[in-house]
Length: 141
Image 1 (cartoon, rainbow, N blue to C red):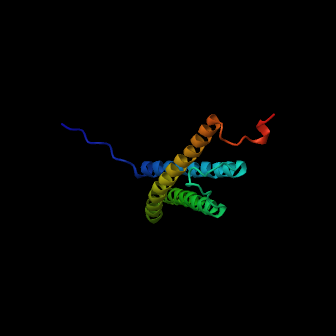
Image 2 (spheres, rainbow, N blue to C red; image 1 turned 180 degrees about the vertical axis):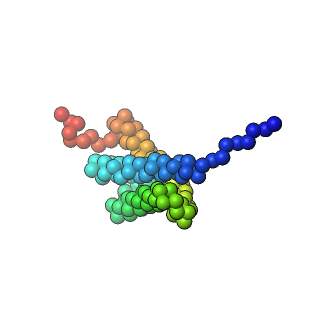
Image 3 (cartoon, one colour; image 1 turned 45 degrees about the vertical axis):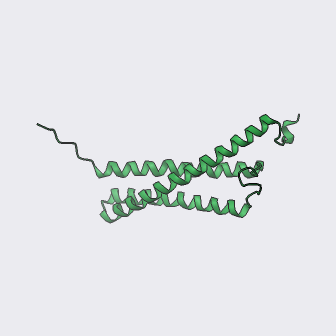
């Protein structure tokens, strides 16, 4: 005789969704700090943009968009937690829907950001090895 599969507890699925949102929220936070590093050190982005440096307004808009995704992911996680605690089916459904949407959105945004940052660092490292990268004043000691 075949044994029946164990039932999946909806609370386990909800907790997994919360963890996914937390991980990709961290990716968005990583982008925020990377943006600060890029802005402070003013890395040369001309190779990535076909000869033109992106304006700071465009970068600020991207940062605001990422932070909105992160905040929405956190709010969907809060909806899930409140729904579990109060056993409110409406909050659980809303939290799951928004949590799933923002988990997917944060995944793609995080993937694009990590790929872009790795491209910047690889190009920068290659230029340093080629000897064509400008040297920072603090390294000329």
